[in-house]
Image (tube, rainbow, N blue to C red):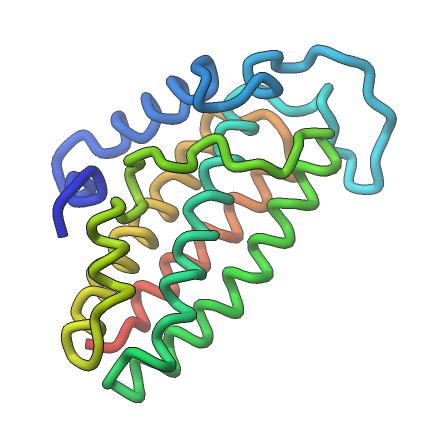
Amino acid sequence: MTGPAARLGRPGTALVLAATLSALAVSGCAGPEARAGTSGAAAATATGTGPETLNPTDLAWLQLQLAMDEQALHILELAPGSGADPELKQWAAKVAKAHRADLAALRELLTAARVPDTNPHEGHDMPGMVNATELHALEAAEGQEFDRLLRSALRDHLTHAERMSGEQRKAGSDPEVKQCAASIGRSASDHLRRMPG
C-alpha cells in the first residue's frame, strides 16, 4: 500500500504519532470541542469522564480512533463476500466484532464528554486509514486480490492503532480514555499477531 499509512515502519514513528495527535488537538481537524479543551460546565457522569477531565490529546485520540475504526469495520465487513481465504474471513469476523465493541466504547466516552458523534476526519488522508483510491480498490477486489489488500490495509490500521494508543497514554489525561486506549492497543497487537498469512 502507499500513502501515509505506509510510513508507519519508518524510524521516528512514535514522534510522528505524538506530533499527529498534538497537531489534531490544536487544529480544525480535531473539532471545536477539542480546541476548547476543558471549557464549559459539565455534570458528573457515570464513567467519570467529562469535558473537565479530557485534555486536547484525549479528544483528538477519541475522534481519530473512531474514524479509523469506522473505516476498518467497513473494510472488514467486505471480507465474507469478497475474500477467498476461509481462515482470513474467520479472523476478519473476530476483528470486526471487536471493532464494534470498541466503537461503542469510543462513542460512550464522547457522549460523556459532550462531544458530538461526528467525523472531523471525513475525506482526509490520515495515517492508519486507506485513501479513497485504496478504498475503491478494496471495494472492487475479489478473491486473492481482496485478501492481499485486506491484509495490507488492516496491518497498517492495527499497527497505527497500537502505536497511537501508546502515545495517547503518555500525553492524555483522562483515566477512562487511557483505559480505553490501553484496551484498544492490546487488542490491536493481538489481532496483528493472529492475522492469517
